[in-house]
Length: 256
Image (cartoon, rainbow, N blue to C red; front, side, top):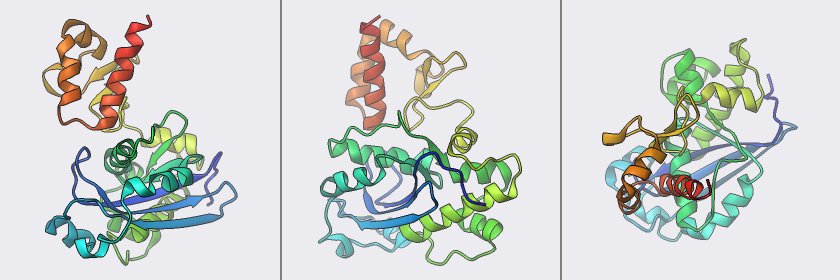
């Protein structure tokens, strides 16, 4: 079954220096852009992260310092990558919790004001976890009856993600193939206000903190009662996108 797209859908995968969304950097990114008519365009970039790649990360994806030393940095590629996806919804495997927040961090470090206001995100892992158990390789074997060759290479993982989503739509009658319903299905029960899940929405649609001593409390209430909490978060090791969302909430309160 073909997906029913109202706008292009960009499947993407990142290989990185580690798993810290706020600190780690991209060393490879692949984007498979699927147009409304089903046509595909795939681009892969190797990226110099500007920092040594830990051996444990190289052991996973096979990319070493020598392989990226002459590659452009993300800042040098950012405009090209952004222009490729700016009209598209986004999809990946575990993308809502890792790839998407980390990609947003890289864009913000490159002074590109990336946000998700006019695009949807579809996390193929969420469909898999809600319907079956558990890894990308297992999902590919289960849904596509194929072995994933080249796992942890960005392009192999990206193409596998695209094939899995199409197979999931074929398999489950309750899944429609349009981006809107798939995005809704793959969102967490309590939706995020930022991308890293540090700030969420409660049932009333208010932003609440999702960590620390103020977990579950309204952001606006805490900022009113503890003005220094905003400054602490801005100076602490939180993702840049989380800080951007926090600032928007604070500025919004000034306009009431």
